[in-house]
Amino acid sequence: MSWGTDLWDQFENLDKHTQWGIDFLERYAKFVKERLEIEQAYAKQLRSLVKKHCPKRSKDDEPRFTSCLSFYSILNELNDYAGQREVVAEEMGHKVYGELMRYSQDLKAERKHHLQEGRKAQQFLDQCWKHMDNSKKKFERECREAEKSQMMYERLDSDINATKSEVEKAKSQLYLRQHMAEESKNEYAAQLQNFNSEQWKHFNVSIPQIFKNLQDMDERRTVKLGETYRSFAEVERRVIPIISKCLEGMVTAAKNVDERKDSAIVVESFKSGFEPPGEFPFEDFSQNIQRTGSDSTIGTPKNDGGKPDPKQHAIGRTKNKLWLFGKKPKIPPTNPPPPRPSPSGNFQSPKFPTERITNRLSEMRIPKSKIPSFRTVRRGAPTLEDLSHLPPEQRRKKLQQRIDELNKELQKEMDQRDALNKMKDVYEKNPQMGDPGSLQPKISETICNMEKLRSEIHKNETWLAEVEGKHGSRGERRSSADVNHHAPHGRESPEGSYTDDQNQEHRSPPQPDPHEFDDEFDDDDPLPAVGHCKALYSFDGSNEGTLVIKENEVMYVIEEDKGDGWTRVRKQGGEEGYVPTSYVEITLEKNSKGAVTYI
Image 1 (cartoon, rainbow, N blue to C red):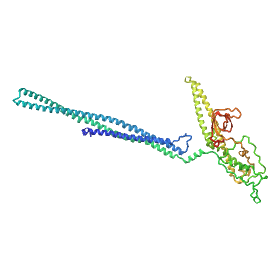
Image 2 (image 1 turned 45 degrees about the horizontal axis):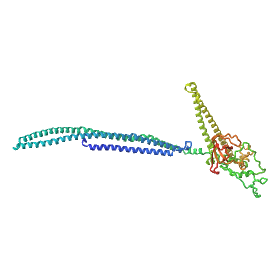
Image 3 (image 1 turned 120 degrees about the horizontal axis):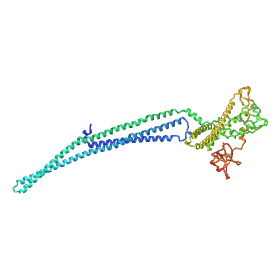
């Protein structure tokens, strides 16, 4: 069916229909625009959600739990999913919405052109009809005038009273009107023929062609809508495989959650390396009570002088210091003093030999050297370079990690040195390529950096060896104590030592630690720290009472500047002395109770 033949007289309706088609196309384009805006907003909100819950700390500070890693993997997959939603919005905007808007503009221009041609053809036909109608009216008017002239001539010709001149005048007027009527008739016939020809041309050639063009335009619009409908769906279909991979990644991340591995990571992260505290010895305060004869069978022996055992008295006084978070024992000097003499005839409880108690006290005091560092960390103490503020196990891991990083940096410097040496050899063989001497400063700097890194590695390895040595010795002591504690009655010596061979029991009692009770009787404790400081410059400390410091070294402040320009500080190793106040940057605690004590 053709609009040109079947709708030859429906110009106005076709005008309205084509306008409706373009409006519908633009309405669909608006729908696509709103849809892609929804996709863009959805993707933006997803990205904001991912950013909000992504870790803001460095990777080293992030937990390594499988549940956390799986959650971060889900966040990454969700971020990729948001990217696919953005792809959908971009493709819709470019291939659907943009194409529809461009096509809409082209349709408007084409429709306007076709309608203008139709209106021009209609105007031309109206003009032809107007000319034909004017010539028809003129012909009609001339015919009426000719009839009047004829009637006038006949009346005068039959009137006997009319003069000859009047009759001749009426006759000439009649001839004139008849001539003009004939000309009007010929003009009317010509205009009528022309109008009929143009009208046939209009309804059989011009209008059918114009309406056919409008029909083709409307059909192309319909085809374009179908293509954009398909493109709209294809855009969504193309991202489905990638979205499926994102969802599969989320499922895989969920399967990677391992509760046992997380528990092991907790142990690895927080294991201090300390041994659990041993059992507290029984303290018999009834030894000084006079026994009656009937009680003698209980039989706790008494010493000759009736004086209490000094060791037992020392044990009683030090019971508050056996707790894990107690005061740290002082570091014994290199040459230990001789053991304290004991009064003769002192007695022991039959169930708790002094040697056993001595071993127990030694065992309990081992972990006390590091635990108080937790308190100093909470109070804001500076981080020590040797990481001695950390528990042994954590310190060992941190030192090992630092050594690995330094080794990587050293390897980079070595590779850079080798590359510079190769370049220098090339320059020496081909001087036109460059000056070998220009590379020497860089080579020297690289070698200097290598030496610094080696020094740092050696220092950290020394600290690591110290930690591992202490940890190993602590474990050995703990193992020996456990063996002595759980030895069978038949194979335990009176002194508490245990041997595999009953015939080779060690009868000599173990030597007590000469510094076992130094904390009880020594009141020369180090001064409490009132803050900490960082060296801004190096100081040689040549005068007596001064302290040698290095730039960026962290120390404890134990005495503030009294106005003489000197501040008393303590190094991390325990060395004390005075340094110029202007050479250090001091940070004091808010009050004395919050002061950091030297550990």
